[in-house]
Image (cartoon, rainbow, N blue to C red; front, top):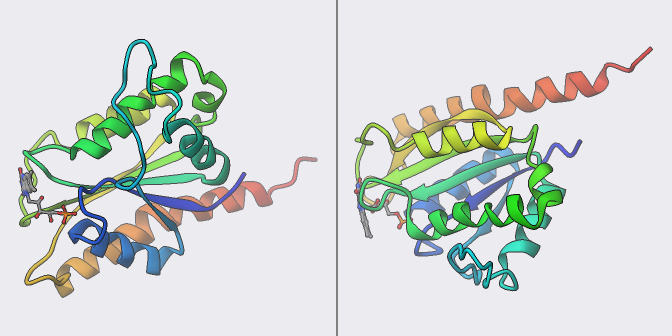
Length: 185
Ligand SMILES: Cc1cc2nc3c(=O)[nH]c(=O)nc-3n(C[C@H](O)[C@H](O)[C@H](O)COP(=O)(O)O)c2cc1C
């Protein structure tokens, strides 16, 4: 199984605060960043009329290439931002018509990074991600809430991020590598 991870950045600005956090995590993990902002990803439609936009080829690339998906979203009105919500809604396409792509999510890992205006994250923010991971057969690695102060990541948040990366993300990859190293008799 491919061990590489990707940070799916759902902010409404490509070089904003969520991107600052995503770049920090990229530097420590070597994960790629996919910026969803410039992609042409329409909302979910029951008649699947957006099926020819960027979503299906992008999602196919994601499931083929990556084992760990880190959703990175700013907090807009107490929840994920619209770009990220559209992206998540469109996974439904992969449960209706593109089932082969959807099935490939099983066994993959999901993590969550939220980025707000301060240290407070209201209860319930993480629930849609945890429940979606469960529904899709993915394992949920955990989450971290982030924010910037005067445009920078405080040193205490940097420590929390190191902890999140080491204990939640990288340790799960080590476990997988060990499992892969055990050869069947
Ligand atoms: C439309 C909108 C709604 C927001 N709502 C919240 C909110 O409910 N809670 C919060 O902590 N911050 C809120 N913020 C602030 C952003 O979460 C914060 O500035 C974040 O770091 C922005 O990340 P970005 O630069 O990637 O967009 C909101 C910002 C915008 C633009």
